[in-house]
Each structure stands twice: as structure tokens, then as C-alpha cells.
Length: 272
Image 1: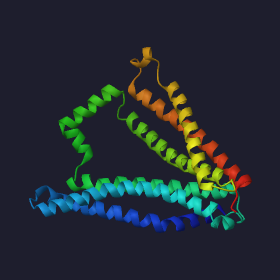
Image 2 (image 1 turned 180 degrees about the horizontal axis):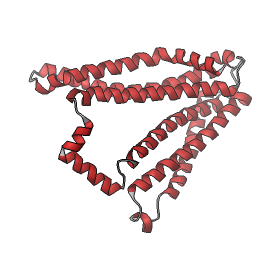
Image 3 (image 1 turned 135 degrees about the horizontal axis):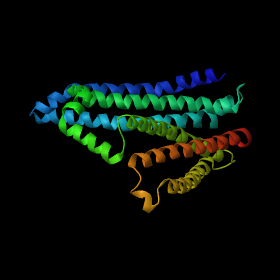
């Protein structure tokens, strides 16, 4: 049944996500094809038009990221807490399946959004100049020297840096899912009340974020080395420790928020 819920969620969110994904990609392609003209033309009108096109790319990227998050949150609100909730909560599925279907679909859309953002930047910049990145770093002295200085300063190397970047990407996706759970938990708490549900959801959201921000600062304080050991620790070690501890904290945070969401949907949900 979880598969059917996921399929239904994709159908419901596709109609919103697909158009903006396509628009960003098309604009990026147009900007990429227009960049040589922008660099070589002296016509003011054309340069202004192309400048607006490039500005729209980055506006579209920001809008895409915001829309992806808003759509996932709004889908939970309408499908579970509004009128549709009467039908959703009477389906022959568990509350766990309802929550997981939305989290899985949210994660997939966040992943697709990240791919589209990277692809749009590639179409706008790198593909236009037809830059061979490995050749650039190996053959162009300033790039190679900068990279070597970074490796020497940070302690990263050609094998540890990709691993750290993967860890950072994993942390980013986990953080995005936890943000959804923040909203899910807050809305599930607010809709357990008979009156002023939206207001109580906002209050719950502020309270939840305040608590976890304090806890995160407490955890970070343990990951930062003491002052006497600060200069003895390599930057790569500290960054890796910070990311891994952040992932562990986010996993625990997500588990708590998931339980809060599940409990309120199961025991306190008031759709009246």
C-alpha cells in the first residue's frame, strides 16, 4: 500500500514541480546559447535583455528550491490536515505509511531539484565555454596552484575531498527532510487543538526550532576543539567531524520529530 501512496503523491506534486523544473532548464539553455552574444555585442538593448535573462536564471533557481519545499509542506497540510484528511486518515493504511510516503516523495523531489540546479548552472556557464574541468585544473597554473595551496592548508587530498563533499551532500539532503518534519510536527501539534489551529501551529514551529537550535549549539560546542588544541587540528579533520556530528544530530532530531508527528496524527488530530 505504501507504493500506491507514493505513486499518488508523485501524481499530485508532479503538476506543480514539472513546469518549474522545465522552465529553469529551458532558461538555462537559452542563457547558455546567448552568452557569446552577450560578451561580444555592443547593442545596449540586447545586452539589457540578456542580462535580464541571466538574472531570471538565478531567480528561477532560488524559486525552484523554495517551491520544492513549499509544495512538500503544503501537500502534507492539505492531504492530511484539511478536508482531504477525512479521506486520507480513513484509508486502509497505517499512519506510518502516510508519513513515509510524503517523506520519500519529498526526498526524491529534493534530489531532482538539486540535479536540475547543478545542470542549469552547467548549461549556463561550463557548457557554454566548453571547459574541460580536469584539463583546466591540470594545465592552467593558477588553478593548479590554488588547488595545491588548498590541499596543503586544509589537509584534504584528492581522495578525502570527494568523500567529504559526499558527506556534506548527504547532510544537506538529511537537513532538508528534517525541515519537512519540523513543519509536519508543528502542524500536527497545532491541529490537535479545537480552535486557532494555524496560530498554534506557528507557535509550535517557533518552539520546536528554538529548542533544537539550543541543542545544536550545545552539540557544536563539543565538536570545536579547545583553544590550545585548535592549531594542532587539521581543517579537514574538524570539518569532517562537524559534518558527521551534524548528520548524527539531524538523524536524532528527525526521529524525535517523526515520533511527535506520528503521535499527534494518531492520538490528537482534530479535523473538525
